[in-house]
Length: 264
Image 1 (cartoon, rainbow, N blue to C red):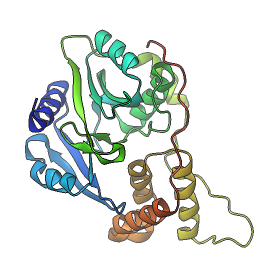
Image 2 (image 1 turned 90 degrees about the horizontal axis):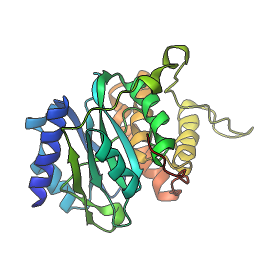
Image 3 (image 1 turned 180 degrees about the horizontal axis):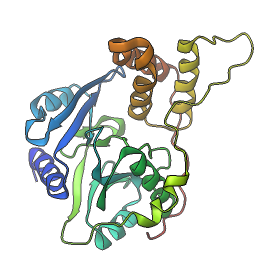
Image 4 (image 1 turned 90 degrees about the vertical axis):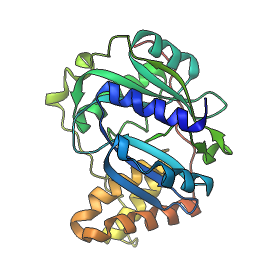
């Protein structure tokens, strides 16, 4: 299947699953993120994304923020576990690296708000061996039909698209959701005495800590923008991109270990 066919097949599956708008992002080699937010699937600027990908930018996508969607992402799932999920539920499996790591876009029986998706992803991650650092509810996944430059330029390919199977029912994962307070704000960096305790200094320590903990830079970027926007206004995007690019130049920790996969 040609690269552009891979992309179209993924977007068709999303549309059939009930997702009609998406956020498209690229991360350039210098760590700067560029975004197209809330675009209808048929209006996504794919030629722009391909041009950026040729210049070694990585290409990501997610259902548009701000609305409930019947789709959750599981990141870095072992291939055998991903196959079991796609055999049991309506799911889209994207292979993102040669060693076998996969994204699963799992169709849900109900549309979930962002904090509900976070809760569901966290519940699922330990059961399928997914990356537990990628459960933010608004995490970006790779778009099929583009190269993964983090993995030496391998192609990101669609390997399974089950659509006639039942969606996953999130009721078990959300049964205690109303009683739990979810806080998406960055935690306090808690710097020792003598360190920079200004808002920017605190955010710098938080960004470095999140990257060292294995959170994906795109997740850190999105949370930093949200946290800094009341203070920095329209400059929040630029500020977040520059902060994360500077942190990435100095450090990049591996992802935390995954648990053994189990059926969901």
